[in-house]
Length: 119
Image (tube, rainbow, N blue to C red; front, side):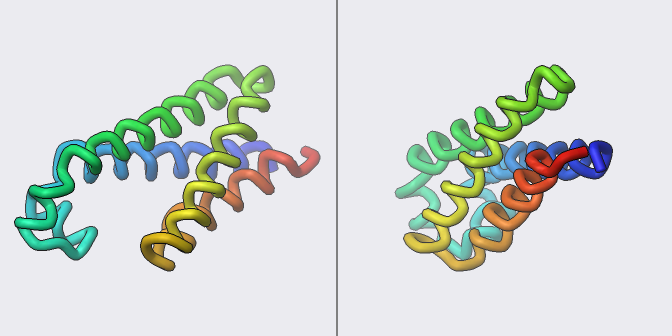
């Protein structure tokens, strides 16, 4: 079970690394606009806010990776950052798009449950 837990945590970290790329570097490019369903004008008007959001997603990814690197000593890091993922995902689903519940919160919750489950 520990291996599955580590794999899921790694996937959540990689997912948040992908969010960082979309929000910081691709926001106003075709891939970013398509991912978020925005026009060029909308993307241009919100580019700075998206970059800030992307940076926070990067912090989540690094925190999860740090927890993985530390092994057993990284347990608290994984729990904390996965809780952040779930809370942010639920908030995003309520305030922005229900899709965020499935793309962000659900993988984070799965990772959290696996990390918390006794090995």
